[in-house]
Length: 356
Image (tube, rainbow, N blue to C red; front, side, top):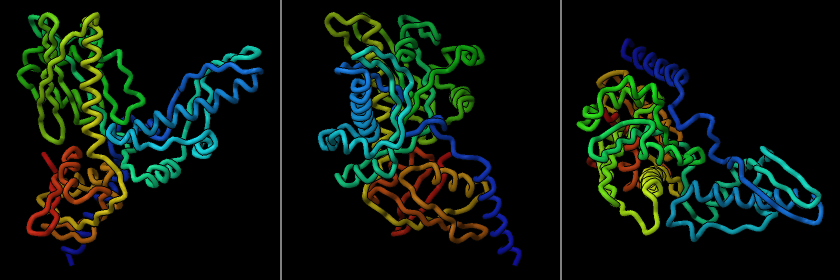
């Protein structure tokens, strides 16, 4: 009886903790089905007709941006092309952020929100996988080495990242505030991988994910060694960028920052795709503490490819979860690593374990 009571209490506690601590997501205000401030500049025979035409253009342009945001680049050629009426049927609301008129011209910025169900249905009809849930935010800590490494909110590499707008991205990349840099260790410690301070920096921004791109500029060649600290474990990679004819150093740095950011987005999105596949899973968690149970439940709830995770059995040393994954079995393990879980098959059974 005591074991049964303990199990029930653990489930109730787990549920209460989860209800009281919502998952950390990329900027909770972000609506994945909304495209903000689409610029339009339209001329017609009257102001009213110009405005109506501008609304149609804004809606079509917003849909194109939304579908590109949610899908992989290799699927862009299969994205549906809809006429104005079909696009309008997908629109949930419009917000006019800026408006200027003349007798024949309309200039403005329009925010377009689409029906989530309509967009999902549209992509489903064309069998195109998509990502819709914002990821964990990622803090980017750029380091520039032009002879000696430096972390500064005023150097050219930092400014290259600052020039890019990631607000309309499912993967939100954030630069630290200058005041937070002053609280950190010297640049040498960061270069040597001071993981404790990097993790503490991430927590200040509500995330476990921090990327440190170290850019070494020698002549017209830029080498970027990037370290990614996160719940999936530490990862590193290196790229080299050469200045194009007529390109300024600042433009090359901006291009490199954009490419690295796009690569981070692509890799995350590829592992968060929601398709037509439904893979039922019953997973075993070998319990070492109540904290493990809470951590697994939280992280399953944060993974967009996992639907309806539930604890169906709980004993003192083992918990049993059921869930449905929207990717094939062979993709599940790689996809779940970025959410801090090992979800793997052994001898025909699924096992789930929180990554430390």
